[in-house]
Amino acid sequence: MNYRKLHSVTVSGSGERTMLMSHGFGCGQAMFRYLVAAFSPHYRVITYDIAGMGNYPIECFSRASHQDLNGYAKDVIGICEELGLSDVIHIGHSVSAMIAGLASIQRPDLFSQLVMIGPSACYINDGDYYGGFTREDIEELLEVLGENYISWSKSMAPSIMGNAEQPALGEELTASFCSMNPEIASFFARVTFTADNREDLSRITTPTLILQTEEDIIAPRQVGEYIHKHISGSKFVLLDARGHCPNISAPEVTIAAIKSYLEHG
Image 1 (tube, one colour):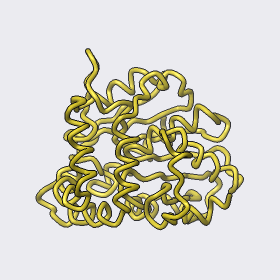
Image 2 (cartoon, rainbow, N blue to C red; image 1 turned 30 degrees about the vertical axis):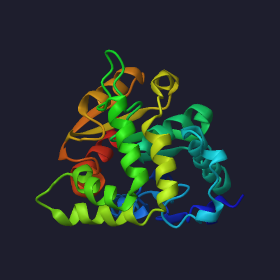
Image 3 (cartoon, rainbow, N blue to C red; image 1 turned 180 degrees about the vertical axis):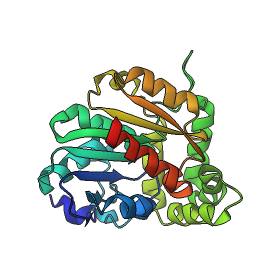
């Protein structure tokens, strides 16, 4: 399998260490443009399109290979192996944060550090665990998404982005969502929002930074704190930012937090 071609892998910079950046649901490589610009002078920065998103060929998407997040984690490993990567700093946004965590469990030798931006190990409330949504909420979300994905995208994307005073941000995320194939979007949304990877957290041994914003309707603060509690040795930083996509809405504080972690731990 040609992972580089399938996932439209882009390489920037030529530093000694490598950063691999993985985007969230309905997004693409452009969501990391500010981080790429900031880090490529000092690192080799690699971005790619997750299976079924961005420029990934729709005809090549395999539901059988992506029934759960471990399938997407295998793609991350495949890209690393094909490019001969090691000592990778993985920066994962949203669902890709947990995808990277799963990849690091399967192949801890490939990764030196993980940066999780707005992660969630489980979106559904369960007993004392608060994920932000009831099971009924998720089923309703998936039903509406499946019935009219474009309408759902136009309604939800601005709220997910937050920062209503900057409408261009919501418009960008809306356009990104709307560019995704509706059938694949519905499939991946169910994989994402019904996933429960809480038990996997204790198996992550790679040093991890968890970045959380003050207001996030997809991954509330309690979720980030839960992940921090269950990944041994992890660091939790509450960014002075709002919304689920601080890599776009608050790139300066996001970049500063990552730089501080890489330099000082």
